Length: 260
Length: 365
Image (cartoon, rainbow over all chains, first blue to last red):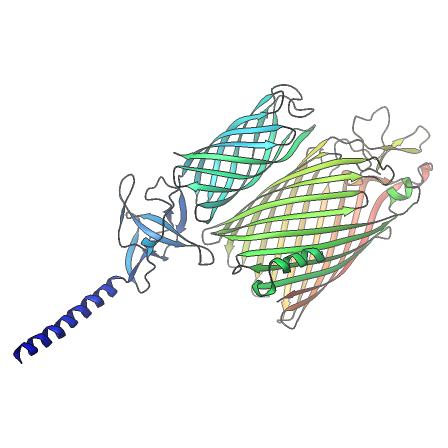
């Protein structure tokens, strides 16, 4: 009888302990939010300020955050946060420096931030571009790309326009928007322009003189292999012109870039 | 058009179309010399939880004209033509902005045009600032009913950049820059430059214009809603310059006021003023004319003014019926109606006074 009493006490005690431990576990699975206390704070695509900005968090906003801080690839620690974009069904992992004016607070909803994969993207890249235009004309460029705001980049470029007889230098700038669509794929649009220097009179079109101008616009899809490299394919709309004449072409472009 | 709508329905059965918006408009322009009837139909819908928007449109311009150019230089004194335009577009909602692409094809007896465009927007600062980037490419074939061998190409490209800033809950400002370049056959296949003879009469000379034209425009838009009286103001100032020496200024204004939930009235006005192209002359003289000469009156110095009214009635919550009336004048400062080219005494400065009426129906389902 005494043994039965001891056993039943153990069972009751054990059940109590088990329920407590389960309760404690469910309590610890509650999520956390990062409350933005300071003014606009940049969220980066990787755990360092050298990565591409992903979004801007405004004062008072609450962003789901992982309870584990991430060591930065340079110095310092970063919060790993889950950024929700337009429509609410597009989510991406981002990073906020622990030195920013933020507070971690409990949340009833656990977004399971650590389940999402992150895609760190380089903020500065070197990009090689090749365009195939009409009449066996080609354009290659080498450019320095810098993302100065989330999704918005500026590129300085130099290169050549090649046709069957001449190679003509170009120098210009480009402004582009690059927005992630799904996974590692992004959609981008660009406009740009600059100066081109025909190798000789009438080199690119009848009437092209010592210095002329060019303008171009384009659209394409880019695959981002993390911070290291990305490739893209797209359409490019190019005009080389001066006051007398012009060469206009809709062509295909491919780019390859490496992160710095 | 039927095939466009059929294709949309085939690809996207009605149960996946979240919302459908249809707009139809019939517009009639009449200046006493030229009559244009223009029916338009446009349908758009969203799919995939409103993240994708698809649209298609069809428009016609049915033209009969006996304008001064036609009277002076055409053997019949009157022309008739019909232009048909089909369009399709796609929009995507992205992380913090949108992407759009469109295709427009237009055909008439002697002119065929295809244009492709794409653009992206990105919102910043909680959608208070929006950046737009876009470009387009067009490929036109110019033909002539007088010369069956004429088939010339005119290509055009444009690049645009826009910045929109919300200033307050009731005001927004927008700055737009647009560059467009045209290359190829920029002459009119029927238009003639007027060459003045010693006896004061004129003969027509097929025009010859530069092979390319670069156009730049900068527009500033400011919209404001005056809460106290419930009136919204939309204002646009636009400056333009091109490589042919034409400069222009445009002011456009629009005032809208709602009366209850089912009626609104919009008043719009526009003033446009331009200088002539560097090589434009009303009548050329053999001794002083350069390599380029034109009979295009839109390259002369002129101004236009327009005032319009648009009442809108909302019916059954989902349908809007609207009317449109516009009064339009165009005054040319150095383009004359030569009348009979052989009669030196009947020349007079050209002007147009036109009225436009329209009626449209919009439904959102």
